[in-house]
Image 1: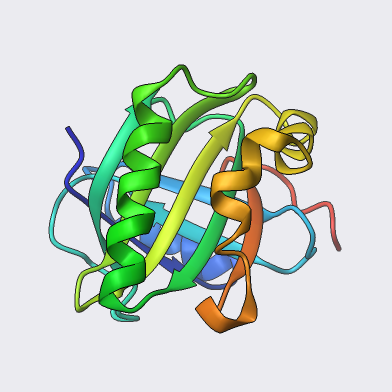
Image 2: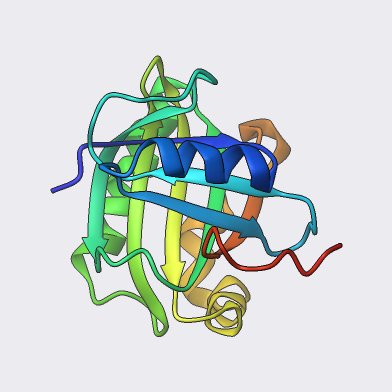
Amino acid sequence: MLHRLSLTFGTRDLLTKIIARNPQRQLILMENAGDDEGLQLLDVSDEPTIFTGGLDYRVQLHQGARDWLGFFSFAYFTFDHDTATVFDAKMTQLASNVLPAGMTAMYVLTKAHNAGEYVLLTQWVDSEAFSLWRHSAAFTPIDQYATSANHFHTANYHQVKPDEPDTNV
């Protein structure tokens, strides 16, 4: 079971150099689905971070696949203790059922040095499956937290191979 993951952002050149220098790591290069310049490198090696940005997370909950393929949605929240407790219970309930159609994995993450900062990382077969879920009644348990009061924001990514040509040039 994965207990921790970390991530960093950068240029394709920088991130592919990190991948080349760390062949023993399971590093996933992702491109932001809505921003031609947004690249992220996700380390799912379950080892102490090699990144310096402080984006280190503990895996609180996982349900589903472990293949790191497809479309990924990162939903960020900041909760006080009481809200976090209720959110945790709702996510545990969601994970105890069959995942929504098209969702292949769900991770609930908390920041290593601030347990009130959460990421709900969901993995999908494609962006269409995510969009259908996001606009369905099945999203209701999460939708109530998707407010500015919880510092909510999202980012969507798909995996790219480090040697794929940059189509944005």
